[in-house]
Image (cartoon, rainbow, N blue to C red):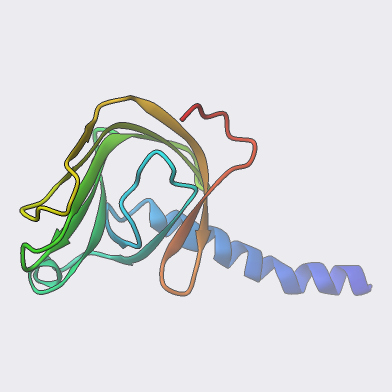
Length: 150
């Protein structure tokens, strides 16, 4: 009887978590904690970026998933006194809870002298990332079983 009660109690929580993850796939532009790069193991998708005016007066990082299966991850700033890393690549939905990321370009530019200019076109398979809901949005965590070759 206790097991049945426990199962009935946990079922709505599990279903809610699944629905929350499926919301991830409905949003194509996010504010993030960093720009995706070859060493990315974890990434926080903080807030869906639905208002372009948010970008014009702040600085931060964005991640855009395009309908053609590509992504763009970039740093933006209202005032041009920063290093500007960005990356491009491909993504593939494995299932509602997993995404596969491949990077094809990483670059960094800046008007500042102290910022190293980088242009790396080495294609890298970053692997499969698990999508976990958080209070602020989502967290992408690289799967330990992911077959990637950075």
